[in-house]
Image 1 (cartoon, rainbow, N blue to C red):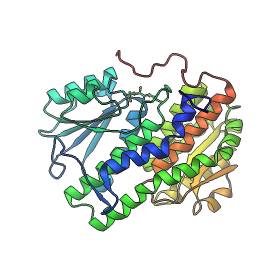
Image 2 (cartoon, rainbow, N blue to C red):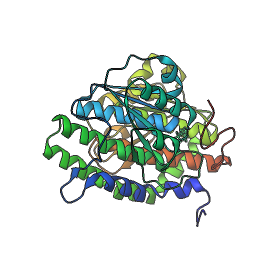
Image 3 (cartoon, helix red, strand yellow):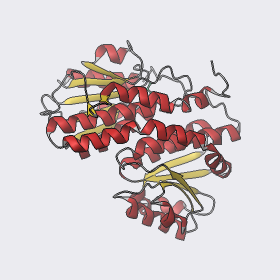
Image 4 (cartoon, rainbow, N blue to C red):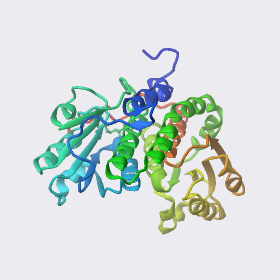
Length: 364
Ligand code: F6R
């Protein structure tokens, strides 16, 4: 049941800390701070390429995984939504790896991509939440997210659990390839293990996000911006908002804004920015300043170090815990999901059962 929560989605949002902890502990030894991966259907030390495929939010988790694996393990990664990949006929290297990401393990397009990639000689690893699902059974190997049943149609805790698995994989691959030192591994696993605690703290201070939701609920269009591994989280924010509140939202790479979407900017379009301090901070902040100069109302998620610079032009700045840039996408996923939830509640939509959507899309 929903317990004391109004909706399954609200309950599931509050499960982020536990789910993240349970999923991370599967792959990180807290004593040695080393990543411990189960036997995989391919050798990450020599695999020539990884092809990610998935749908919806699971695809956005895969996009973050792509940034992580390329950055940490220096493996070439391709990724595509399953409905495109299955008809794209991409050239695939002998002995390549395929990673499918799915909460249900039953999504028709992702399953078709899995079968195609397998038939084309790729070693298929599935990241799924439902044990004994079709993808679990048909893949060469499975890594389970420990998110428990997800009832709300919009994915929440399963998404961050997917990120937890993919972050662990990126670090494990980096070690296997010799691109990540043991010291860096220990530093980044420590950063990951702190995320559940930060997530709990974030859920406590929901009132700032509720205030933001009151303004966003009045908008007809919303723009989400981010760079690097925060770009897929901007897409996740936009997806979740349109899915459950029916407000039109778009996610953009912050640097791409001046190539078109800046034409939309006026007082009526909130610009929600994911802008933690780190190597891409200055670049993102300057994109936001350009939007503010055109009357855009900037609402930014950042950390203590990023807040002062953004406060100079942003209408709202929400300060999230200070974390290593590697884990920032996991932490930022939570407030954008919460925002979508609060906006939907204000609009009075059916949060757990949005119109026209099914929890698992088992037809093409
Ligand atoms: C978004 C959402 C959907 C699913 C997509 C894939 O909130 O829930 O976009 O992520 O339908 O479903 P799975 O992960 O079951 O393959």
